[in-house]
Length: 105
Image (cartoon, helix red, strand yellow):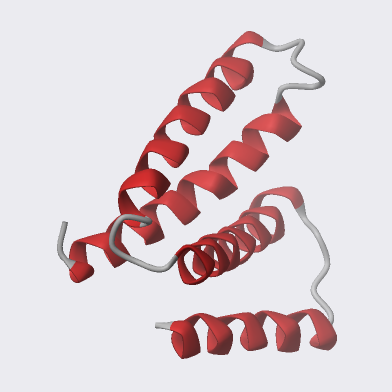
């Protein structure tokens, strides 16, 4: 796997991690079938992708970027679909996460 492909896969894994977290919320304590199945599918995909990425990128960098991308995506999903409020400090904090991801790149 090339470095460019590793970064691409890492971004996809971060997005899937956000979808995993939303599925966990929607599963209502694993009582709803479809979100529960999606949790299992996302878990397998995410950790398979991370295992491949960590062959190329340092573990600390891959993990930090993966969680940062997940936080950004999850915050956007919750803002647009679940109506969470955004204050200037939250927006500033998200900006700092973005700077950190590019700094690690």
